[in-house]
Amino acid sequence: MYKITNNLLDINPNQYLMPGHSQTRSNHPHKYRQISTSHNYYKYSFFPRTIAQWNRLPSNVFTHNSLDAFKGALQDINLTTAPFRHLQ
Image (tube, rainbow, N blue to C red; front, side, top):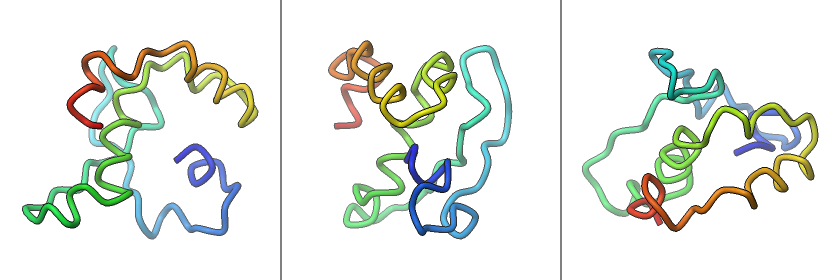
């Protein structure tokens, strides 16, 4: 998702991703609108599943200006605990 958001892949983010609705203290400015679906085959595909995880990342992860720094920040997050556990 980082690569798509930062135009590091040849995928137009505007074609698949819509900016999130609102801002609260627990959200970050890179939040995307969750894709709703009632079909499991799509619900667990890349965009719906990844958007849910992306939106739950803490805002300090997005302060890094390179992919390597972003990956390093992700290593400091325990993705096996709430709120990430039920998304895997």
